[in-house]
Amino acid sequence: MNMTAFALTVGATFFWGFSLDIAKLCTGKINAITFNAIQYSVLAVVMTPLVLLTGINVGSTWAIVMAVAFGVSWLFAGSQIFYYCLECAPAYVVVPVSNISSIWGVFFAALILNERIGPAIPVSLALIVVGIVLLIPKVGRKSGPPLAILLSVLVAMMFGLTQIARKSAMMSGIGALTFVWISALTGASLLCMTALLRSSFRGQKPDRFSFGISVSAGLLNQLVGGALYLLALSMEQASSLAPVTSAVIPFGFLLSIPLLHERPSKKAMAGVVAIFLGVIVATL
Image (cartoon, rainbow, N blue to C red; front, side, top):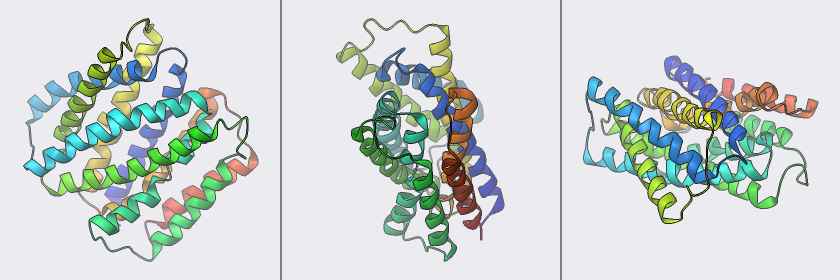
């Protein structure tokens, strides 16, 4: 594996895990559409001068289609589903389940991109699955309703598929910042239109804290984490990097302890170790 791509992906997962956890701080304060409309609208505003200064590099029409598809499927639909799950269940349940996307990422990379799967990848995925099983507590009152867990699985499938969309876009020559910009404009536009049609902004009065968290989540997740991962995808196969993206699970889990004051069990800590081992094995 290209070690630069590995380092970039690990860096991306740290910022993803951090942004996923701080999003939990806004649950109950503002609704999902308002939260996501704020984070991606500000992201689009911030990205516009950056892209204009660095130059718009769209690559091809197909790359633009993939960027728009990412904005629709992940920033618009996926973000709302994920936020709903966070409202219903603890972050230490939602974050691990929604990030079994590494399995789907490998599957879709082989199926759609015809990428060759190395012998270390199945071993890596097996360790990751063991870690996830150890991380997730027994389904019950404390872990939230079964629907939230099922929707978290759907989020994982969507994220796995978006890895393929991003890889395809990078192969078609689009620039990382241009991709983030187009997807942010798409997601923000759909979220704002949906909010206006459903009157979702009515009664929502985000305070300075909620607004700051919303903005921070969007910038950390997409501008920093998303751009790092896109650069990694330009250097390495999606199937090779998919297991590495699972590092978001232990990062999100460990960061939830100081940020959200969640108490992990010893079994859960063993799960964190297993996932990190799986990430390391993926580099072999």
